[in-house]
Length: 233
Image (cartoon, rainbow, N blue to C red; front, side, top):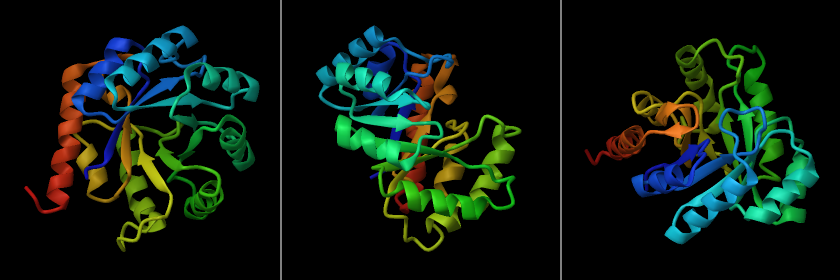
């Protein structure tokens, strides 16, 4: 099975339906007020209803250092399949989401390959958060100089940490994100074996506006890469 595709930063019912019909397995709805892709609760409710009507695809509600009560209100209202924590949330905070809200957690971990101790820091974070989260998501920090140098340096250190070089992956499933496009996703999948890949700006015509052709091409690129890795092409 090829890596699952998560289209994040979806802001409309139309884009959510299009993403699922193009082959995405997950759509991400952002509840971070400062984000250009933030959605209101009313719009999010419409998107979730539309996805449920398709009877396929799952919804991820994305937060960043959110007040727990606010998160509770959102989760209660829209009933997402996952909550994604994209800030400095503690393992206990993530555990509370599952135990008190009944929602599985995806914890984003930023990868900073420019830090000398990054390998040790990542190993500790993976071990810690794997205990309380269903999945992890490795992403590019906002402070990274630019997409391509970050990607290349990250792919120099992450495979060994995750066990991808030996074919024995970490037990916790993970997504990979960070400036992905149809042009560079094969580079990632040739080095890593993630459960899924996460894309936002790489399939947009403008922030928050998804482009059908770009989504289709991204998903095709993921499938082509998977087929090549399995020797089926």
